[in-house]
Image (tube, rainbow, N blue to C red; front, side):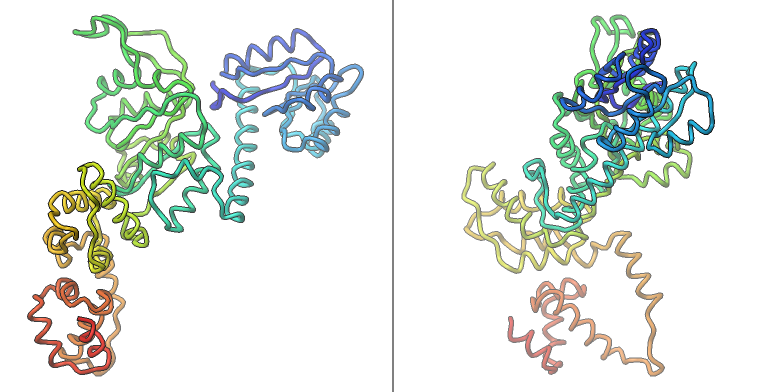
Length: 480
């Protein structure tokens, strides 16, 4: 059994040398490297002035200062440090008193390795959650980002995205895995890179798309192989997980891996160990694992295509990225950014664009999300031979009347179900007029865009407008 975070620091306070040695061996085998052994309890308060600990294991029966006195002192002066009592006193009253005073757990000697490691994991996890909740509350109240620079590659003013950034700042400091979901093109790898930057990890950010990898390729890519492990393996090779030492390993399209690969990934997350192909000797890893998928992972679990235990392990922290159609306030910024970026890459002056372009893009649902918008802008800038981008190029790429994806279809069906007609039905002419008014409102009076939204030609819309004389229609006529 391994403790998830290799960076925890633990102090063990016990006047018995043999006990100190035994506990330190148990903790080292569980993956905890930073262990401080304290035989004289008087040393602990002095040591705490210079440093802190993730956890303290405390004996009760000791000379000079009893464990009870130390427990009172610690819960008063250092309430943020969790404490586990380890003692030979097998009395319920004593255990209850210690828990009341602030101890997180009470273990009676002799203590089995699995029992003490299980208690440590539980206490550290609870403390981690408390710190995350505290940090998240602080971020939400302050409405400020501590690591603004880490998110500089993500162009946004959207409040949903700002909320995600605040959540990232809270969870990035832990070593728990993170699951990122969202439609294709929403920027999942950019978010993973931002998490790595905020975490301040010393190692590299290593990314791999695992879609289409069979179990052998998955194992070889991630874990590497020994010489002679298979035909053609003429020399040993380390896997990407080794390259991500003290860093972050990002696995994209995790929903596509085989069941055998899922089991191997689960072992890495649980035990922090892996086996290179052809080797019987386990290797340890301290890489932080982030995974992403554009599939409905809940549906994959429900249908038995993705292991439930792996899903819950990966879902320690979950980030869902909104599609571009839910953050349309970012479209003007993204357009400016991609025009500048594409013009720079082509070595040409950045062209201007007509104001109608933003209206056109705002009324498109972008099934390919930000990636699709980027492709559109890059293509339009490459084809641009004047100072202005052509609106017609975008109209050729966008057919609004045929751009309705499954989500939008669901919204329309929902609208029809909820629609309630008055007892006297409106005429077709009245309904047509209402649709035209709504299309003009959404297109901010641009008749070409309104016609596209209605699925008719500009000329057909003009004929209908000539017959309408309401103040609203007259206003929109005057805008063109």
